[in-house]
Structure formats: C-alpha cells, structure tokens
Image (cartoon, rainbow, N blue to C red):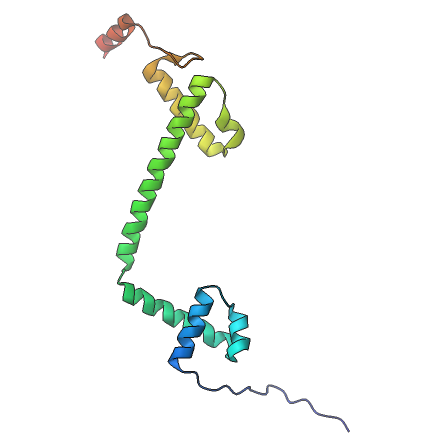
Length: 152
C-alpha cells in the first residue's frame, strides 16, 4: 500500500499571550535567541516573530518620544563632532610629518585622507614658512612679509 503525501498541510498554532510575545522579542533583541531559534522554541512562525519585532520597535520608538527630526538633529551634531575630531587628528599628523619629514599618511591611510593631510601641510608651510628637522619654524623675513602686505 502506498501512502499518499498530503500537500500543503497547514500547521496549527496556539495563541500566544502578550507576556510571551514580549519575552520572545526581548530575547531576540538582546541576542539570546535568533529568529529561527525562537520560532522552534516557542512554536511560532518566523513571519509572526518578525511582525512582533516590527510592532515592538515602533512601540519603543513611541515610548522614547524621539521624533525623526530629533533623531536627525542628534545625528547631525554627532557628524559635526566627528568632523572636528578628524580635522584635529589630521592637523596633528600634518604637524608631525612636517617636524619629522616622514610621510606617514601616504603609507598607512586611505588616499583621500592622505591628500587632505598633504593639503594641510602645504597650507601650514605657506602660513608659517618651513620647518626644519627639529621642528623650528623658519618664518619668512619681516621684510618679505611687509613687502607682501604692501602689495595687497
């Protein structure tokens, strides 16, 4: 006797209470379980768990009270802070390269950052004159600077 396969037999699930839903979502968000593990452990479809996660994240966002505009403002402030740090670090690298005479940035940094540092070095040399190996500035003579001011 042959057994006929039943196609697309829908699996029945029990209803899950709110506490269990929140427990599952919390375990997934904290990294204790993956979606697949939670699906097997609690016998809930993965799509249902994904729905719970979406619903929970919007609930959390409403409770924190952070609007999209506030979040954008906070991120812009963070970008400004990081840009300041980057400029400060590039200034230090440019100064060190001028003092030591060693091009560290070309060897160890991406090309775009190395170019920015090279530009900062050139600007420093134009402003301050040249630096020798010991880090002493050789500023243009006062006659040259007075002559340049008169030209302007």
